[in-house]
Image (cartoon, rainbow, N blue to C red; front, side, top):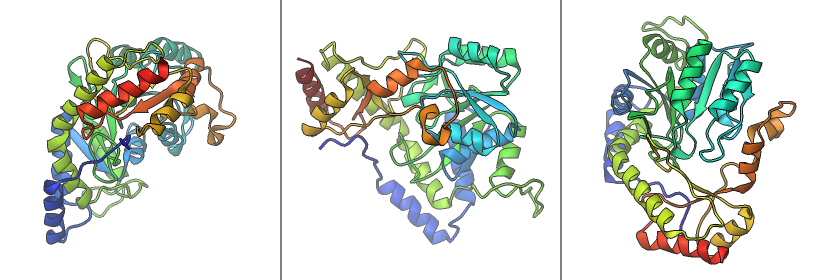
Length: 357
């Protein structure tokens, strides 16, 4: 079976973990500060604030931007539910706009229409599958509304829009280091920003509202990253460019090899760099295609089979999102992670073409 994900942990990660164990500083400490600085430098931002996971990074970013009870945050319904959950965790309300049918990211025109109808206090854009959202148009909309723009870059480490790395474009960027992501810390997340005030408030928020002394200026949480997670992250960050290169090579080979017109292939619009956390195709017979792939030893994933506003936890939340709802019925993701070989990529394409014949 060719798995849909295959995290790679090597000797350098193990050596760094042993170094932390030998130091005795297992919780938040110097290792975390080093990882924060290195990841911020990679993204091109002034600050990085490491957290316990991607959801807490989103939660901290919203809180640090002073989004709270009664506020409304414009976002996409076609994402992992954590995107909307983080909005609710700060007491705000998610307001959904539809997605672009080619990129599956937030459609700027749909976002503008919803923004005109709703009094929104922030925009939360998702770089779905590793493809940057249309940040120029969304940035212009945020500027017109005078609201912060937050990037959910949980799946997009190293992706670029207009030559800038995601996480450096909005007021804050949020990443996840879950094991299936393009790089991992086991569990973990990070907030990136150029804003000193956002970094300061986020750092307090994830550490029980604590200032530099043992004074707690606000009520916060324990959302800190451990030193062991940071040690893994520092080693993984060194390997991230190679991981991305392999994913892009596998994606390009797969796109060139698939000949059937029965599936819609992913796109990479001009001015963007897709890092292919997921290589997602679309088929009107998604379930049949997935069953054929699985029966031929190819792992698949469906991200996501249900839009957020259709989830039981969001009962009563309305949204006009027919494009997102159609995508949720038709998308299926294929393996393109670094461990997939050229021969395996060709075999995946062959199974798809045979099914479409």
